Image 1 (cartoon, rainbow, N blue to C red):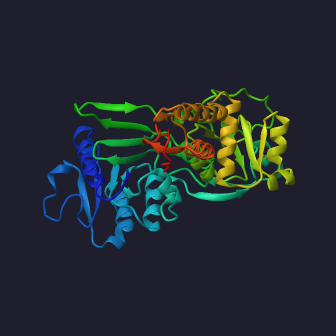
Image 2 (image 1 turned 180 degrees about the horizontal axis):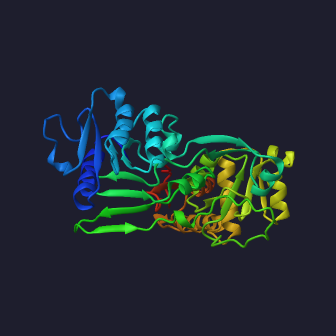
Image 3 (image 1 turned 180 degrees about the vertical axis):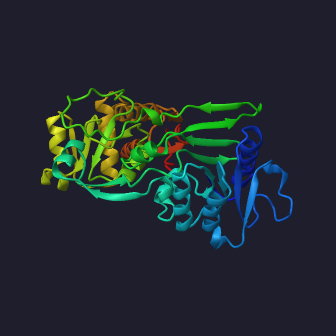
Length: 382
């Protein structure tokens, strides 16, 4: 279970211990560092039910007590609070390999935080850089150096505690980490308690995401799936973070995929295109359109996304600028102001520039995603 300090990890851990011990009837042992779970008295905290506790003399010995609990007390479940060192991560893997159910907490808001934490990443399998052979890289449609999961994860499931009344479940940690390393954001199952006290849930779609294909046979070019609203883009030599930020700026939906075969189009830069990389060769063999940018900059990424949106049936930039021209005519005919349709930041910037060319005022009003430009007789752009 992951969560920021104070979000309720230890409280939830006590309840898990009680349910497993009292209602499920399992032998539960709590490794209680600093007496945080069951208190420091002779009688443990009643919130843990029939679960037993093992007090840890000093926090630095937590990993040793974890191993001792398995070897000497025949537990079916071991519960640990605040795993934070590499020794504890190694001890947790040892416990998991011995067939004991393990429930633990760690600091971190999301599974991504755990993956990027060098000390605790072994809990979800660990991350390593792998250099692929030419044939394997060609089959995957990726670069030769890729990140892969090192080993099976210690924990099969991860729960992100987002607040007191909202949690997110990653039911298959191994699969989720694999797709995350391909640059695909995870989509966990989310559960929350609404205002009436009812438990609601939204089913995650992580099971629908396939890892990178390693089949050796080339496949036919796949038709775009709902490309008008969400084109699937394979960025090669282009920053995924910059691409995502550009999509937010121009308010265009897109999907970043980790392989050429699953993409509707490929985006790269002039330098990478000149080198004739294998991923680009594969894209051409599969008849995937390849868009080439001069540089990996935000304005060019925004322009690219707008071009793709128009090509796939999205809102035309011509229509947005034509709207400014029509509004300018109405203002010149005597109207005080004309409100335009909501647009992304990049299109609004172009609309402001066009209004300036007409020597009329313009300003942005509202909040995203409904932020829009208002054309007026006085110059008041913001």
